[in-house]
Image (cartoon, rainbow, N blue to C red; front, top):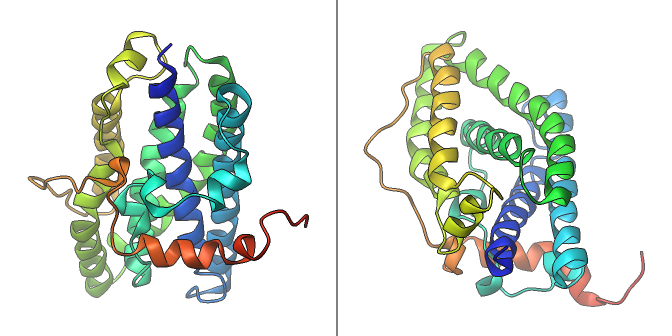
Length: 251
């Protein structure tokens, strides 16, 4: 097993959910209805748990720093999150579309990882995939309601948000040099295969919402190599403020 490739994959997966968890948490107290305050906060908490579990695997099996250091102690250039999760929440329509596209990708990825040749990851996948069913259901319910069952304005806004989000969402599937080794050993099916399955899943949901899936967009890439959007640095400053006051503190 190519350990460097494994670490790279797990870090980028963990960093994605860590950063998106922070973005989701920013809706607490600001959602359009109380139920959505609770829902986004719950999803954010789950995603923090997913990040912690991945960082724990990296610590226990590959000798990387403990989860707190991985989450709060790295510089911007050391993060491997994609640009999609770093973007500000914007209006609620964008956050819902990002919720749908990201969790559809996560559902596909973790479903495949249940068959991973790396047992600790396969065991974790069975747990996380169950949680993602509810995340995806929540996102799909709102997208369909605002697309096919809402007003002309709500549908137009969802389509506009989808068009904006799409090229960033494609960056979720940015491949890496070591991925071929992981595919060959049955670690995971590869980013191209995951993207193809994701597109089928998303297309079905968008059809129910009477929204049009964008085409001919180039993926926004770079985060996997440490080249991030302008929004990550201030997010990290905010997210790590308490940790930086005293990294050794016990809470």
